[in-house]
Amino acid sequence: MTIRKILTFPDPKLREVAKEVTEFNSDLKSLAEDLIETMYEFKGIGLAAVQIGVNKRVIVADVSEEKKEPFIFINPTIRILNEDEKGGYDEGCLSIPGFYEEVVRPTQVEISFQNLSGKKEEIIPEGLLGVVVQHETDHLDGKLMVDYISSVKRQRIRSKLLKLKR
Image 1 (spheres, one colour):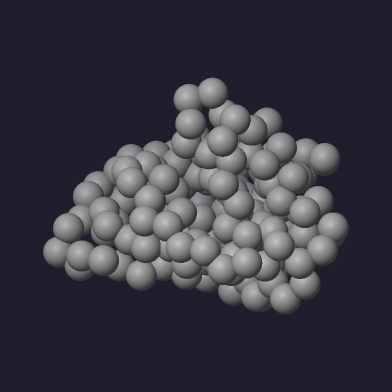
Image 2 (spheres, rainbow, N blue to C red):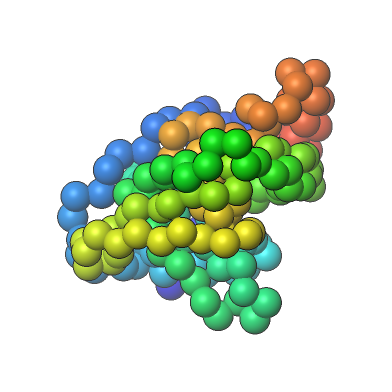
């Protein structure tokens, strides 16, 4: 397992749409292990492969207190179960370090995905896990949490992060 470098906003690679995983092999297992290790190292609760520069539809999440219950989602898709029920959460992002903004998302979703063996599965996550999976799936589609906030706030965050890189 290797801890990987996390890309930060406004890196253009974060805007790429990830490619579907078609090979379920030891390389995929290694990628998932690296994602989990990197997520834990940087104190995250979710991470998408695109955030470490790997253009594949793979995300990991762990919302448990003890950080010992990671979920691995390959080729995840989200189906909203109740369009009318939405909730706001203060979201952070490992690719946008130090910033938290309220993002309103559906509270009831179903996640369809494949596991590391390629077997199809579905879950209806509760609470924070549902939010995290929606956030990370956005990454796979080239979307970031800053896309949910005003352009003024987004530009301010962009400027601060670019200044930190210098």
